[in-house]
Image (tube, rainbow, N blue to C red):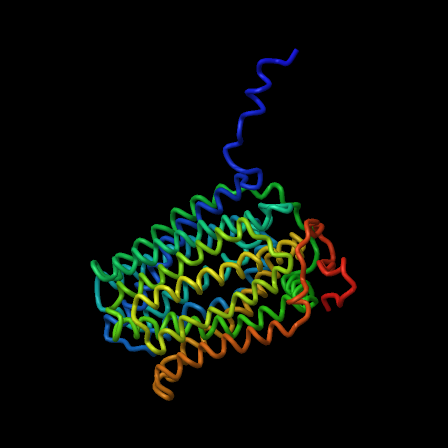
Length: 437
């Protein structure tokens, strides 16, 4: 006879999916809090510079000051994150970001901030990000497993980008109503809350690393993992240029076009919010869609990233800009989820943070130069020509990445890379085509 309790047990549904464990939930919640503050702070920092009488060159210098420490410290941050408990690295980085943004806010609210002071505080924030980024990416990838990894990354990015959407829109409105200082203060508080959440992460599931060489040996090992995969270095090279020119357009030219033609901080914040809404839509799509050739699909979806720069070059009416930003956000999110899935599939867990650091390093290495040169480029060629140049470079480097066979042919598989493996097993190994270097 069937037990009367059986139907009750079988009908009970879990409160969350199997892949959404404790660490994943904490990481997602912390990312939501951080993005709510940080996206508004990006708008606030640009308009804080402009309100002190600065020009496009000054905005670019502050943006470059934030990015330069990423270039200097990312590789060290990746090695540290694979050597120390990742959650401690993340919490320490959040604390530095909290303090630097709080000081930035106080400077703006209480006096007449100098350009060098804003650059120094931006540099401290960038230093925190250099250590946080590789640790966070390694921690997230180690918190999910199996064939549902792609869906987990899509849901994580959907939550993160949804928060970015709200943060950019609300931040732009707050800058217009109460000024940039209070938005920077809110960002400092967000870092404090996120750091407290990340302090509860559990790293007990990650096997301790065997003692071996020092920091330089770790960096060399990470470089071997990175350089041995054509798809990896090709896409990172692509984004070293694409990220640089898009950052210059968003951080320097966008606020200037908004000030001169679109109505100021409020509309520009909403435009960034439309980009965020697009990324949410793209993440929702990727919770269901699992393209077999994930990097081919993802790289094709990078082409629309050229559209916002072209729209600002015209410039198009604000309503058209919202649509363009939405489309660019949706398509780049398809790439983002595909890229995270490829890294999770191909890179051994004990090397994730170091490979992530080389990824980040290549992707941001030219950003300080591009943002610092944005003002002089505007003076030399004109804002319109500079923006068309940004759009053209995105198209050019994306087409070049598609010329690499491994970018086109890397295929999704369900067997994860073993802990401590060599990492040179390609998803293409099931087919008689070229390997990954």
